[in-house]
Structure formats: C-alpha cells, structure tokens
Image (tube, rainbow, N blue to C red; front, side, top):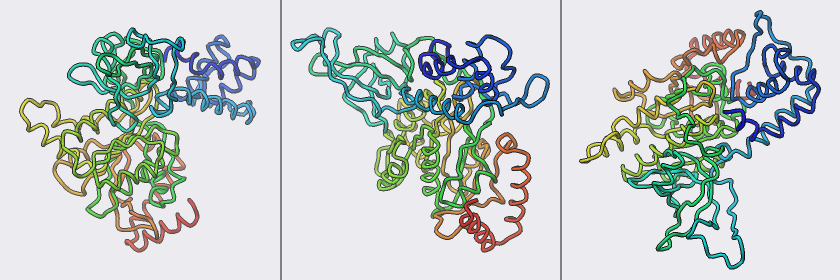
Amino acid sequence: MRESELLRVYRPLYDYLDGLNIHGVRDLARAFGVNAPTLGKKHDLILRIIAVASGLSDPEPRSNKGARVKSDGASPESIEQVRRLIAACKETMPFLAGPDSAEQTEFRDSASDTRASAGYADRRFVGILECLSAGGRLCDKNGVRTDVFVAQSCIDDYGLREGDLISGYAGERSEGRVEVVQIIGVEGIAPSRSRPAFEDFVPLLPAERIPLSASPVAAIRALEMLSPIGKGQRVLFRAPAGGGKTAFIREAARCAAQADLRTVVLAFGRPEECGEFAAAAPSASVFAAPFGSQPAERVRMARLALAYCKGIAASGGDVVLLVDPLAELLRACAEVSSLPGVEGCASLAEQLFASARRLQRAGTLTVIAAAPAAGEAFDRFADAANCLLYGGAARAEGDPFGIDFARSFTRRADLLLTKEECDAADALRARLAATDAEGGAALLQQIQKENL
C-alpha cells in the first residue's frame, strides 16, 4: 500500500502516534516488533508501526545485532489503543467490511434534478464485478447478480478486473437500465490503473496461525497445535462419506469469521446446508450453487469467488475460501469444459486450490477444501496441499467429526509454532498414535473438558 493510501486509511492512528513524544513512539514500535526504532525520522517510524501493526508488513522479531527487540516500554493502555484504532480504521475499508456494509444513499443536486442520464446519479452501490462478454454486472456479497450494469468503457477507463469490489454511483440509462456512472473506490482505495494484480506478488510460506482455540469442537482446538492452519495455507480435509466433511467446513468458516478474516464459502451440497453456513458465520459470503444447480452456474460461482478473494488478498486483506465439496466443483468443471466453444474450465478447481498463499507486502488467501478419502483425482490435490487433514473415528462426545492426527500434518509447522509448542505437539501426537480409537476419543474428551 502506497504511503498516501496508508495515511488516508489509517489517519486517526497516525494522528494518535504523532501526538506522542518520540520516546512513546519508540516504545510502541518495540512492542509491535519494529527493528531499530531509534533510527530515522518520527514520520517514517510511525509509518512502519502502522504497516506492522495492521498486518501489511511482517514483524521484525530480531534487531540487526541478533538480540531480541525490547517490548516492555509501552503501556498496555497505549498498545490496546493502537489496536482499537486499527480495528476502527479497517472498518472503513470496503474490502474488509464487505459489499453489504454500505448504506444506500439517495441524493440529487436539487429537488427538480432530472439529469441522472447525463451523468448525475442518485444511487450508491457497493458490489462485486462480474465480467460478461461485453461490459459487466455487479453482484452482491453472495455472488447473486444485481440490476446494476457496468459499461465496457468504464471497465477499461478504471482498469477494473473481475472480482473487484467497487463502490460508486449508478443511474438509469436508456430503457430503464441501471448503469454505473461514477466509481469512487476499488478494493477500498481510490481507483488506479497501476494497482498490482494478485499474480504480481511474490508467494511466501504461511507465517501466522488462524486462531482455532475458541471452537467448541475438541478436534478443531487440537488442530491449532497438532496441525496448525496458517494464513495462506492450502488445506485439504479428506474423509469418507458420512465422515463430517461439511461439518468441518462449517466449523472452519465459523472460526475464520470469528477471527475477523474475510470468509467466503463455495457451497455445492444440499440446499439446507447453504443456509447453515450463513447461520454459522453471518459475516461470511456464501456463494451457493446447491444440488440441482446447473454446472455452468457452479463454475460461474467458483470463478467469481476466486477472483473476489484474489482482489482482497492483493489489496492487503486476509481472506479464507472454503469449498464444500470439492468433488462437485470438479464434476461441474468437467461437464462445462466438454461443451463446444468452452475453454479454461477443466483446470479451474486446481487453479482455485493452488491460489492459496501469503503475498509479500500484501495479504493472504487461505483455501480449505473438503474431498473424499480416496480417488486418483484428489491425490493430486493432496500432493499440492501444505496442510493435509484426515477424518478419523476418534471423536469427543458431541463432536460432529473427528480428525486422525496420526496421519494429518502441516508442512513447515515450525513457522507457525514456537519450539516449545512443537515439542508439546510431538509428545501429544505420540500419545494419540499409541492409543486405539477409544483411547483417542478419551484424550479428545479431556481436551474438551479442560478447554485446552
């Protein structure tokens, strides 16, 4: 994010830090993991604090000399104030708040103003752009098409891409068609043709865990240590029919939403399950194409959801995309790609799964998908996953699913856990491997009772 955009979004936080003396600013810099806070000007140091504290840049855990930075100078009150201001500033950013957050505003220049067709609009919108063969159309937070269209000239002028979350004003054109006449923001910032695309960023390994300890499901809480899920992870949950794949995706969506991550669910299962996803995570976007939907509609939803998530990550946000079940997406892609004149659908499912990553100097895209326990097609996804989870028979009482921790693993978990946590995870994994299903269930029951 450029300095001008950073200052525009985080101006209240900048003003707060600027009002402190230099010693207070340096103490807060140390508290948030900024190296060498005594070097450089106050303005530059404040910008570094904002970038690190807001998640736009990685923390700097060690100084140039190899010693740990000190973090005991800042008061808890000042640290909490910085966090509150960051949360307040992020709420003003559309790509974090979501396309349903903007109020609908009616206005005219005068009571007799009838110039909407000449470029004066009377309707404010926030929506996700879906590109059509000519021009585009806006969709709501769940991928459902609205009545607002976007001219191809507008897409070209502003450098818009499919999946962009755009805000602005629309007015009636000829024959009552509602069309965008002014764009105010793209992905929460001023429109710019030079903004980088998702593919332009360097992909990095996940370095921060998604918190799961608040889940009521013991198996999910145990995941946080035994097979942690990081921001930017490719997660494949494999289980046989009836093994709780949908329940796992639903609980993962709830945890992601509780962690204030943008959460998007691709739901291809039973119609009632789509409603359960929305109820479990009200802030989530549920792109639903349930049983009975046409394959082309399922492919459309997957394309739009993936493009939307890429836009969030490229703009500095953290987003989690969950797919249930992956088998239905693969089936839809195969059916659509067999139609004459259709290209690029066969590999959509693989492209979606492979897109999960942490972006250098930007955000993260995490993909969590449910798949059958066996199948050659899904073995390819297992090879690409850097977090592979297997459903298991051992489960605590009341849990809708279990996880086989002896087979499940996270690649490079050492980047997500401390040395002490890695040692504890190895010991707990050894205990689970040495017990049968009944003993494993008892251990998970203990985790549940003691709220570990």
